[in-house]
Image (cartoon, rainbow, N blue to C red; front, top):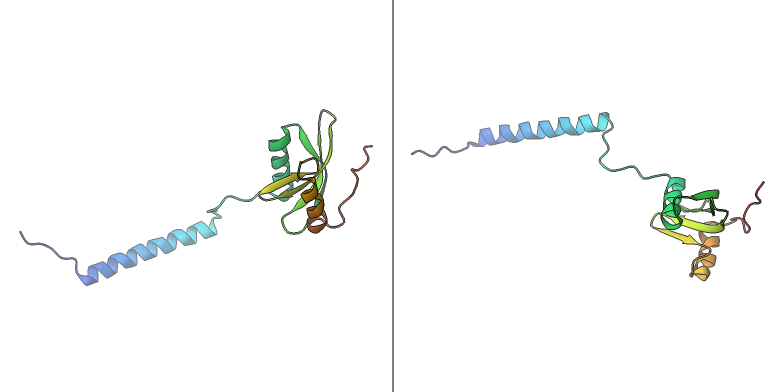
Length: 124
């Protein structure tokens, strides 16, 4: 039984076809907007998600202010009337002014959100 060898010319032609097909796939995905990674939510959406995960589905943002980088600061309330707690939302962490780490919150607030309101806004 004779063994057939793949010649160098056939190997080069085969690899050229693979490279061309890969180029076509990459070109098509970039022109048609196929996203390889999920879109990151906006800072306000991220903060609301973090707050609802921690405080429940009734949590709502009463005030929101952009901080440095991807940080947002604001006040959160819950539909049952409780609320008015300040928060700092970072992509991987949420801190509330009512947390046991109050000192860390107070030290971080002027750094990440300079000029942030010091008292909750008055309800109309």
